[in-house]
View 1: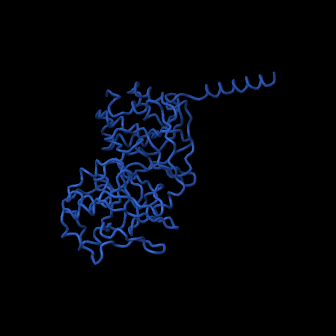
View 2: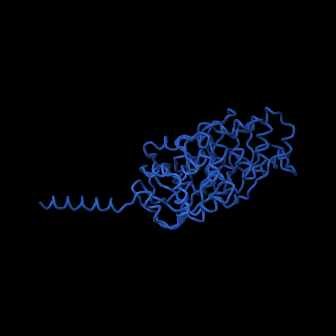
View 3: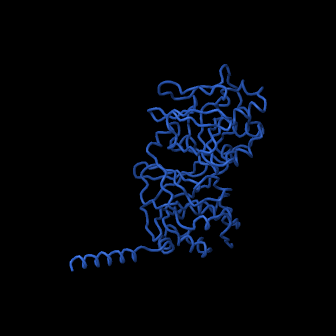
Length: 383
């Protein structure tokens, strides 16, 4: 009888707990700092209802200030002009596949953004997560950051984290290179007629040299044939592997599009090198993978080059005898950045793997039917 009484008590407690947990719409409506978001979502009851019906998700909800800033920006034009593909993509990128009430270490968590025009990677486009003390930061496209404000809020399908900025969908490689002021790389891709190929190749890792890296070997560049430049640039692309920093292991050799391997070195200090080039800004998310900015141009004719000995603050040039140029190569006529991005303050900048140790990719146990819900323009929103 006592056992039966305990069982009934436990069952009653579980029922009360379930009743106390609101559904997603109720939860959002009760948060005054999300009134801008909820007012907008009310325009789309079908969309909101389907979103609320998902299970095992984490919703990142921009607060009032963040949502107002988005609506007043050029990036927010899609929300007012009725671009249904982008509206759907934007909201799906704020839904993490899996329930994460407490994010205590860096991860690259998969979202429900899956259409290949926005996420040409397997399992949904990722968001990078960094935890520093009591501050949890999400990093999205173009190194856009958003911090969690307050505690996680439970609802029947998972949890909600309120954030202070709207996440930006990762752009293609060429646009990302331009906006991060990697204009030499962008210009070199144009010169070699590789922009279309690099922007659309799926599931890839891109080691992109900085402008200073191209300038450092300026004398070696003007006389390159198109074939030679193509060989150099494709040596910076690893296809078939999205090598987020937590997946780059010491001694790993990765096959490139050029056909020759690059070698990863992870030093005790946490610095990461690709052959002799140091990763200075890791984990820039792009539509079809990830970019790591490096401080030297890689040379397929010098594929055995290794990282400098000791705890070096910089890599070593791979083009023997080359001298620097006064101007940045390949930038004549190249579009300039339209926004200012503080890449030096990007999480992990200049010490790539120091922020990547122990970071695992969570199990992808997302909601049933999520792909159908967020599959491009499958869900029609009428403005």
